[in-house]
Image 1 (tube, helix red, strand yellow):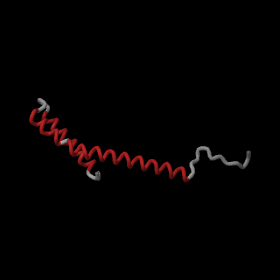
Image 2 (cartoon, rainbow, N blue to C red; image 1 turned 60 degrees about the horizontal axis):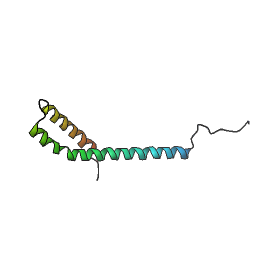
Image 3 (cartoon, rainbow, N blue to C red; image 1 turned 90 degrees about the horizontal axis):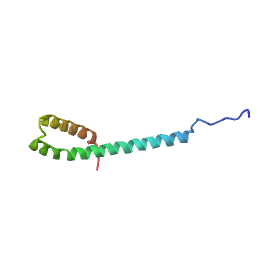
Image 4 (cartoon, rainbow, N blue to C red; image 1 turned 45 degrees about the vertical axis):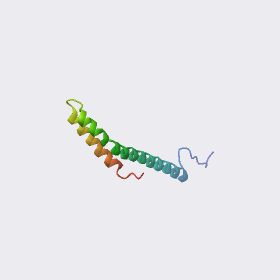
Length: 84
C-alpha cells in the first residue's frame, strides 16, 4: 500500500499527556510517602535515645548515638514539609 502511514512506535499527544500525568502522580505519591515516613521517623526516633544512652551498647555507644543523630537530621530534612 503506497501512501498509507503507519503509527507504529509513535505516541499521540493525548497518550503522551496521559503518560506524563501518570508519572507525575506516581512521583507525587512517592514523595508524599517518603515525607510521611521521614516525619514520623523524626517524631519517634528521639524515644530511642534515652534507652541507648542509659543502657549503652558497649564500646560502640558513641558511634550509635552519632548515627542516630545523623538519621534524625536526615529525617527532619526529608519530612519538614509533610502536612498531616
